[in-house]
Length: 200
Image (tube, rainbow, N blue to C red; front, side, top):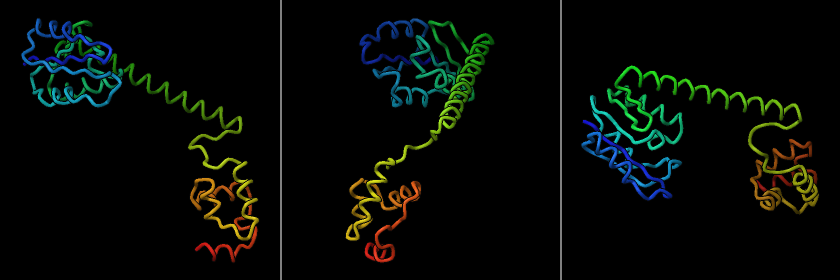
């Protein structure tokens, strides 16, 4: 069975070109939806993929109608191939039911892997360069050095509790304690034991 999938973005309001092309190549059933290619939720595509059976062919007007990215496209086509479903793109003249079409998607898969490796290498290189300049990667700290200085000064007041100080900076007591420790401030500069007992 030849099944078509058509997608138009919110900017492109006219699916007729795709529908006519899919009908012309003998699609017996066509799923269509209006959604941006960036959206993960494509309910009609999900339904279309569920309907496909071994021996069927999924046909699209153009490659970018199916995948949100090269990686996404390759994953969908490989999933179809594992289920015994062929894929055809009319504009690019790609048909995975023949050797030439399969070769094209092997090349696409290699390019997607190449892209992932490049991103990984750039990320590692960026983190290494940041560390060399004294900046550490990872999640941004919730309290700046200036905040920690202010918090330590506030805690010099014996009537001020850590809970109050933490609330002032919109953090938890645990975060406050870690920040004080990170910057080398005493945990309870005013009256350590008495203050801890007060806020337990």
